[in-house]
Length: 214
Image (cartoon, rainbow, N blue to C red; front, side):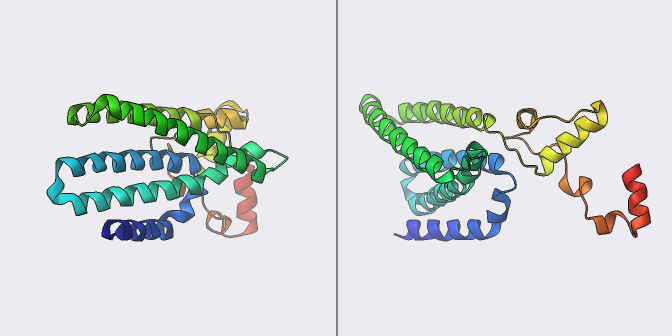
């Protein structure tokens, strides 16, 4: 009960502190949620190896998984919106997406039962299975996110468009920007060094006109 309660508190703190960033960069946060969930699963295995520290390790694992699920669900709607296009049939897409999640969970549960019968209680086999399945899961999510194309600009995509335009004179299409933006690594560009308000860029309209001409 204590580990579940503390896990929910951690989830609440995470949502209040990081929620504003999810809309800006949903791909990167979705991938981070996958890494967090993998770490949470790993710590659950550690509780079997170190039972004396069960409460501390289990609380940390539960918090990571709660935070991961919150981040994944919060960023999922941004992905669904990108699939909607002009129709914007988000409710229909969400319903189909949730149905696919249920089917995947049921298939995974069945495979997990069969795999657990084969592995047994051997710690070495459990660890090998965990590493292999986690690597496959994270790779699958990475490739999945590569297929998502956003038609709106955030700081990184805007920087990519500007850089390509300045160097080649061409404006890249959303699919090219999606291919170039990073998911795992940090963005190539620092937002604060590239973007500023108009008020900070020029002290009066004449100076602003001069900057625009340049």
